[in-house]
Length: 280
Ligand SMILES: NC(=O)c1ccc[n+]([C@@H]2O[C@H](COP(=O)([O-])OP(=O)(O)OC[C@H]3O[C@@H](n4cnc5c(N)ncnc54)[C@H](OP(=O)(O)O)[C@@H]3O)[C@@H](O)[C@H]2O)c1
Image: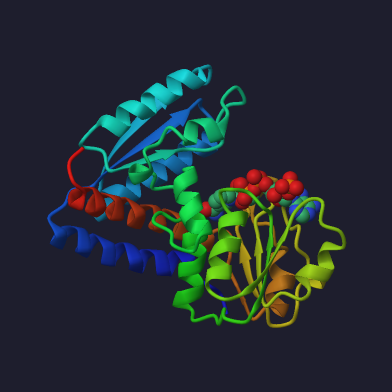
């Protein structure tokens, strides 16, 4: 079974568009990009297009690559104070001179639609999340939409980034899976991956997961975005793994569109929550 993220994301965006229209809100998302990395620019453009599609206003803050950490923080603080803005998305990766954690901490938790602020990550860790990071949220939505059983399953996540691996592990745990988080120091990785009912791979190495590493009938979620000879491919060696897996996400058209749909859902949530919150 192909887990068609594009189709599910399209459907969720249609529903969201209706919900936003009925709500009478006009949520606003601000994106912040530092430098001119072409991939980051492309992702931000896609996010603005999705905003337009569902009825979310969007503004882009573009800062030059040599911006200081203090200047990035100031730009974020301004957005925190801006009553029009409901959600703030800081596009990663940031240039080397900027410590990502420190800048993330500047985003007001109630506008942190990426869910990377320590207080949002803490809530996720405690099992009571407010804003869930978009890629793991999209993965969980996809698993839910395809009714992949999670309770009691063995879930193995390869990669422990704050953006994907760690929050994904927490969400799978909250869904009663038994979770193993693997990383670059994991010994005999294949012994872990071969046990997985659910295998999530977020490593950033093209075709890293081979068919021998996958259990017959497993659900394989490929988060990776890699380019080989100018062609987009995931972290999973797709064709041979697809023959063995019970369900698999394609690249493109799997996790990517779900990430964007989740961002839109988080932004609408932020707008509703802010509207209900007492004025500061
Ligand atoms: N589709 C989407 O929406 C989306 C969203 C986010 C990211 N991505 C893509 O997903 C990929 C991963 O990104 P990320 O931000 O999650 O990760 P990341 O920050 O690039 O880190 C890579 C992770 O892989 C682990 N790793 C590296 N080599 C390994 C090995 N040989 N065996 C086991 N683990 C290994 C690293 O372990 P250590 O921690 O030990 O270094 C690290 O935890 C990238 O291609 C990125 O572009 C896609």
